[in-house]
Image 1 (spheres, each protein chain N blue to C red):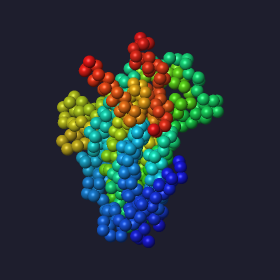
Image 2 (cartoon, chains in turn yellow, brown, cyan; image 1 turned 60 degrees about the vertical axis):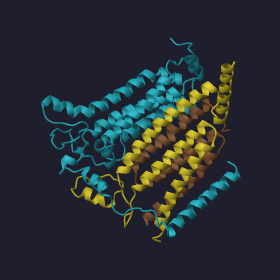
Image 3 (tube, chains in turn brown, orange, yellow; image 1 turned 135 degrees about the vertical axis):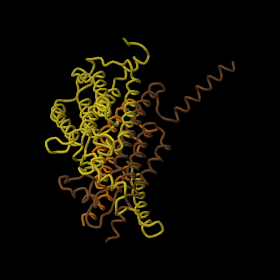
Image 4 (cartoon, rainbow over the protein chains, first blue to last red; image 1 turned 120 degrees about the horizontal axis):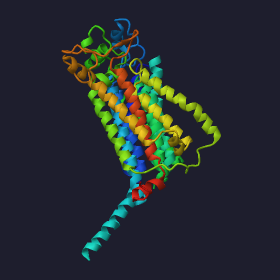
Length: 144
Length: 84
Length: 270
């Protein structure tokens, strides 16, 4: 029975890595830009989850506690919390990472809208064909 | 005992998130893909709560289930609707 | 969602379960989850509310907010700058597009409008509550601001863009709110420095309580409850700035295509 909790935590860790791999496949295998953006958000979320998982700890009896000093009036409060609390530093770093990921995604969505307005499609294969035909037209003009 | 229930719930949520991630990446109808991605975000929010990170839950719920699907649905309305 | 997709997903789940069992059996061993804290984390938890050692403390019972705004305040400053850059770039790419009033169909049906009218103040209230408890319980400025932005998204979808513009949620107003929030954060960061320059004592930027070599401090208690010093002001201004900024991006992304194309081609700009 005491072997079950490490097994379940390992399942969580392996599932984060598998989500990472599936999202990476989605980024380079799906043709439209919108699907690439969706897969990129899943990728960054799984990476942040790995960072939060590093900060977890196992206590011998019961469950760990979030790093909030609940009874701050007694002078033993922080010392009692230090016996059961999880690591607060990865959570602060992941907060910054989520905000930066949000900012980059918002900008990418705006640029994708502009690409659709100019070219009429967001599929990478069709964009490549349009670029190829544009380049052939320019080469024909130069040769003549 | 409580630790066992928390770890079991974490493992169930993680395994469900694998299923929804795969369906979100493979699906050709883009609106359904966004819905699958939002369900996967909810599973992740449950895992964050069980990993004792309540600040991250309060960031992740409005951003992952509110802002991301809203802005990607606006993008889908203005561009392609099928992933081909 | 065909049957083959579900079968492949179930097989990936089986792969995850078997792989973690194989990791547990030997070879790599179980995932190294520690059973005692690292030294840095122990120091953060013992110092985040410590009325005895005020020189290293932030006097806020919430550990993560104290790290985000006091111990690693410069990280948060740069993250706010990156968010500001993204919002400004989205606004600059739709320069010159106007919202012509009167073109919309007026929104959704009456049932949806009535439900939204009840729900929106509750969402804003929840966001304000999350902000105002940010230094005592989990929460803070960014969390509350993002929740309030969700209320704007709801209002945009249920009523139309014209109704929002008629009620005063326009680009200029939201940009002014965002700038006011950012100026507030900058002023709080240099407040003690300016006071120190005026009086003639030593002070630092991003200073919260007394530090080594500087006796100035923000007021740390308000009627018996700890306020976290400067964390109160940081949370307030950050919620202001974030809610206005995210609402602005959603509104800019939902402008009508006919307006945007005519503005981009050069017609109709006045």
